[in-house]
Length: 253
Image 1: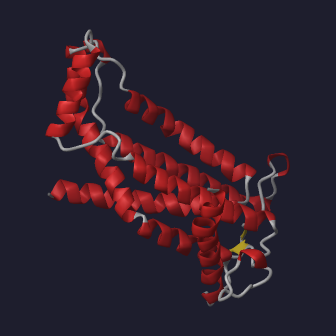
Image 2 (image 1 turned 30 degrees about the horizontal axis):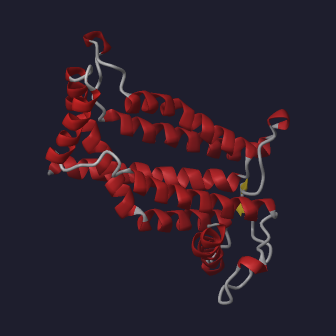
């Protein structure tokens, strides 16, 4: 399994990143990261769209699901049958959003490994990971826009003026994560606990992720090289734009 991952996901991403860096007129590894992130996100648009649409449909069905759960709360068999019938009537599958999520997670792990391995190697490219048609640029310019060292981490105990741009980058990544999660929560129906409804698991998890997601992003931004924060920011901003576009189109339909 590891061999398949390396040959068909990790190596292609590694080579794509180096190839894009090589053809850039201005040798800026940060710009290469942003461009490759956009390419990955564009390729995954069909899966992302399916996942977002599945989540939206499940959110719209939540009141009816809660109603059936309350109606058959003493008979789990009837409850399951009623829910299956509801899914059939609405032509949806509660697990339909899982596959797109898994595929995107695999790509996330791959790009993380690519950036982490290159960064921890001091932004020196490994010949062993390159295809024959991709030239080795040697030492990569590790400065993004000339102000952020993409291979560096933040030492909280010794923060200097030079760390300010990187700290801003990390805060932007965490802030964008908060905005994206907030957007996903916007269309969730509010469950009124005073009416005896059980807490909705998805809604509870979303509320937790509203803060856990940004905190995780902050942790990654502080503990790992800045290149990962740049990827995280570019990826999240793309997802925010995509979600806004899909929501706008759905409202117009």
